[in-house]
Image: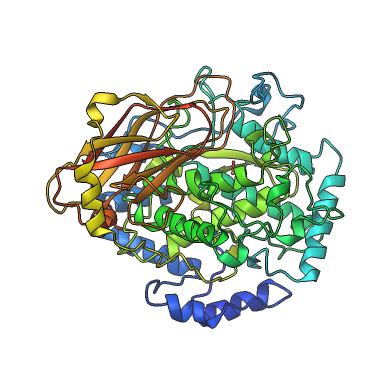
Amino acid sequence: MASLSPPCTLFTTAAAAQTAVSSNSSPQPRFAKPSYFFTHAKTSPSFRVSCNARNGEQNMKNDSEGKVDRRNMLFGLGGLYGAANLASNQLATAEPIKPPELDKCGTATNLNTGEKLDINCCPPTTQRIIDYRLPPVRYMRTRPSAHRVTPEYIFKYNMAIDRMKRLPADDPRNFMQQANIHCAYCNGAYDQPGQGTLDLQVHNSWLFFPFHRWYLYFYERILGKLIGDPTFALPFWNWDNPKGMTMPPMFVDPKSALYDEKRNQSNLPPAVIDLGMTGNTDTLQVVTNNLTIMYTEMIRGNQTAEDFMGNPYREGTEPNPGPGASERGSHTAAHVWVGDPRQPSSENLGNFYSAGRDPLFYCHHANVDRMWTLWQYFLPSNKVPDKKITDPDFLNAAFLFYDENKQLVRVTVKDCLDNLRMGFDYERIDLPWLDYRPPPQTARARVIKTTSDAPLASTIFPVTLDKIIRVQVPKAKKGKADELLVLENIEVDTTKFLKVDVFVNDEDDNINELDKASYAGTYAQVPHKTNKKANKTSIRLKLTDLYDDMDIEDDDTVLVTLVPRHQGGGITIGGIKIIEAPATKSS
Ligand code: C2O
């Protein structure tokens, strides 16, 4: 249960840490631009390379919060399930999601047609499952930015993927077998063990980051093993930086093992990724929108850890309780942007069952995972106060994967919370969105609201979003308070790409520009079919900065505009309300 502690070294300065990581991890030096540390050192004082330093710090913090402290002690002793009862303010009666029963894996379902997929997504079954223990970290795998890799790196990566494709079809490490992991966990092939026909689903909840981290972890180790390189690290698609906003060049060479022809041909380089999916054709505006989206989903729009990570999902409960800001935002957009409109269901990346068939998927998800590490360890805690989920149903949720030695292993969420303990890190790249708070819009916002004749929210919901909707929503409180805008009882057609942007006191024009204070956030989904009906989801958008920048905190109501970016209906919002933000646990 408890894993061995890797041999860790405590680095006291970021520069020392970076040098040390580079020197033992990777054949080509990948030094951070010095400016990264100078620019960000102040706001992120705790550059933590040492796993001891991280864990030590966590424990010290927890000591001041009795409840968390006691639970952590129990985890250390292995009293995992009993620990659930200590969390009095949480749902203590539930249990964590259990790993699937592979021998009960069923057929996955195709999108659009609603028919069985022509492939079997199920992995090979085996008798022996072992509890995975993180091996000691001998080599740090430093994941490079995909736009900055050397020809030698591309050669190695290619060779590794090529070998993965040539493995016997029934080898669980084979390329299609690996792709099918995603299909099985995402397209209704697994039920929650012992819970009737309740789907096991790893998206649209707090399991999103942990599942994909483990998935990439084994994928990376398999690739490294196939080329005999224990330092091999997946590249990340640096779509949060203007220098990385095109499809990384190594993936678009038709002769490469990294190539996939099922991609949107209009979005090959030099097309710039449109994380806002607004269809805006002005490249500079698209870049500006992208940076605003990153700032909003990483910092401005979240009150609690779950707002970023996703809503709780426990055994015996319906799947898809609600995605976090990152999952529904940049993550979804990149899937949809790459998916091929010539294919019936936007294969490969535009649909969960096929996404893993495009090598770019793992590069995209490396950046998604990088966002999690940045959010955990680099964002200043005055801006993101609550970074940890301590709920045992989160920490003890488990998955199954085949490791690089074809051994089926059971892994838990709590073992994947620290990337350094898992032996991988990311190349340091500047974060241009870090200070990208939209400019204030005070006077205008007031005029817009007072002249609006939009109906009150209480009179029109539920509403199907097939056009722009404007409603007046009462604030929770007059004056200065942290408030959240809640879109509740969202019912979606899971087979469709859907996206809705939310604005507060916005004017009628320029809905394709997001770099303004009135942009509050986004709901979006990648199509995925489960053969059972989807349940209702809700999302929360933090309004604190927005109130400041629009000068509307003293008003009684605000004007909320919902802008659908997809064609037709497919999404119904049950209601909108503004609530006072719950207190955050600071981490
Ligand atoms: Cu499991 Cu990006 O999807």
